[in-house]
Length: 228
Ligand SMILES: O=C(CO)[C@@H](O)[C@H](O)COP(=O)(O)O
Ligand SMILES: [Fe+2]
Image 1 (cartoon, helix red, strand yellow):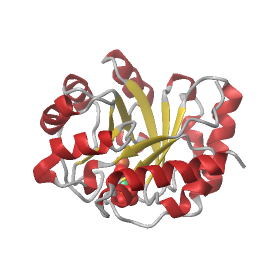
Image 2 (cartoon, helix red, strand yellow; image 1 turned 90 degrees about the horizontal axis):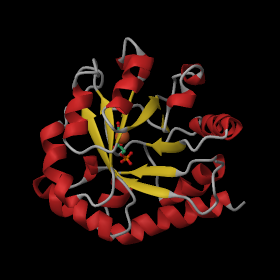
Image 3 (spheres, rainbow, N blue to C red; image 1 turned 120 degrees about the horizontal axis):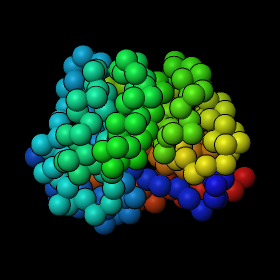
């Protein structure tokens, strides 16, 4: 299935939420129109930062009436997959550099009942998709180097989004194309025009405190880009 112009999912990243009130934050962004909850897991090994694990995913699950989109920035990755599936993840994405056997890790995610995503850093070549794209439910393109919220969007990722969109459309399967890092109302139109259908936004949603305004602005501008 090719991208429909009306599809633009917004996934607020909890990395910029108030961690003392995570359940309420999850509820608030869903009420404000979030389609997914993006849950960033960092291990201070694959990336130089440390966040949260399956226990916290399990704790927010009762508040999450939309799918939890787990972004694993951990190495090694396989042992955590069944734990996150058990904790309520709907989508689990990982970085190919963090797995010795990418095909096996994708199969593990799907066998655990979750949708599988592969995450490409800004400098990761598209060739990593070559033999696995038809097994994926989602491709996540990083538009910052992973590890921190609040960084600036790396413009050179735009042609990469276009290239992945072409590959997905050529394959004819419904694979989501998610973009993560530095997404703001200001650049959402260009990201939508390049072919993304799912946008992660952390600081842009949580920093201003006006969740609905921020989510609506990102979605409206991204959809305007699709319509061009
Ligand atoms: O995975 C990551 C960072 O590694 C992201 O999900 C960020 O948390 C997004 O935050 P903003 O760039 O939107 O502030
Ligand atoms: Fe992320």
